[in-house]
Each structure stands twice: as structure tokens, then as C-alpha cells.
Image (cartoon, rainbow, N blue to C red):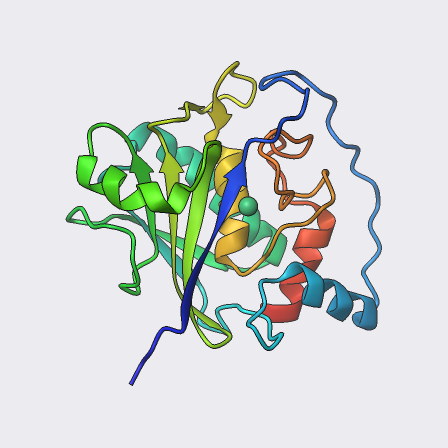
Length: 231
Ligand SMILES: [Zn+2]
């Protein structure tokens, strides 16, 4: 019998940082990166992956590529940005780690149905909005990755954008809205098992308003973390 032990989820919280949304900052320089020694990489993976209560790293355990579908609620105009984020993770891994499979034929609600799905909550989808509301928690969530695991094996991950309380755009510097591509990049990291990284230059930094957040790139540490669970 398959029993899901615990659904868990991550939210991106708008921090009370003084940097305004859309403020232009310089790109982080591309510094040459050293490959982490194995012991150091293991330590990093054990602190930067989501762990089970007994400390095991949660990932898809070889069940790759991880496939993702779009719920009909997801705006068509945002799909190329999500595809770009998927491509970025695949390039970071060096192989097809995530595969996009287009729209689902029928609207569904987030849950453990073994179909990983991108949702976009808006006033046009009241049932989805009602179902997603508890996942978004208190004010300030941009998007959430709702995940299910069987012990240390991820079995379902749904990524839900809050298009009711937040504005999104396909421009990274659009004032007052969040960049779809960098939001998808961060949430896909969670869907692969990565937890937050306190480094503000990381793709997996927890703050919505961060230096890295509007950078559409995967930081070198996040890339190397893939080597622990996906080779
Ligand atoms: Zn997050």
C-alpha cells in the first residue's frame, strides 16, 4: 500500500527588505567555480536538501525526468518563461532532469495525484483559489511548491502561483510584479528537493525580494547540489 507520510510545502515570502521590486541591480559576476570536494558536497547537500524527519534527503531517486504539466488555469503567455526555467535546470544538470508535457486536458486541484502540475490562482478559477488559499498561508506568498513524499522519495510536486494577491509579468524589471521565470526557477528547485539557501545570491534564497531572485540563473552551489541526488 502506498501511503503518503507527509505533504509539505514551501512558500516564497515577500521580505520587508528595503530594495524595491524592479530596482535594477548589477548581475552577479560569473566567477570561476571549483568543484566541491565530495565530503564538502555531502555536507552541503545534507543542509540544503529537504530532509525526512530522520535526516534523509528527499528527491525523485532516479525517477527522472520529472514531468510537469500545466493546469488550464496557467496563462499561456507565461508558459515560455516556465519552459526557460526548466531548460535552465536541465542545462545545470547536464541532462534532461525535468520535462514539460503541456496542458492537462481538464482542470484539477493541487494534490497527490502523481501528476506534477503548474497552477495559476486567479479570480477566474474560484475552486482553485479556495483550495490554494490555505497553502499560501499569511500575507506575502508569491508562489508555493506543494510536495508529497514517500519516506525519502518525492512522489508529487505541484507549483502554484498566487495570481490573486500578486502580479506577475514576463519582464524581470517590471515594477510591481514578479518575474515568472525566476519564480519558476526557484520553485522548480523545491520540486527537485532543494530547501532554502540563506545565501542571498542563491536561486534558492527564501526572500522574494532578493538580489538573486530577479536573476534568471542557477547559482553554482545549487547546480552542484544536483550531483548528490541526480547523476
Ligand atoms: Zn522557496
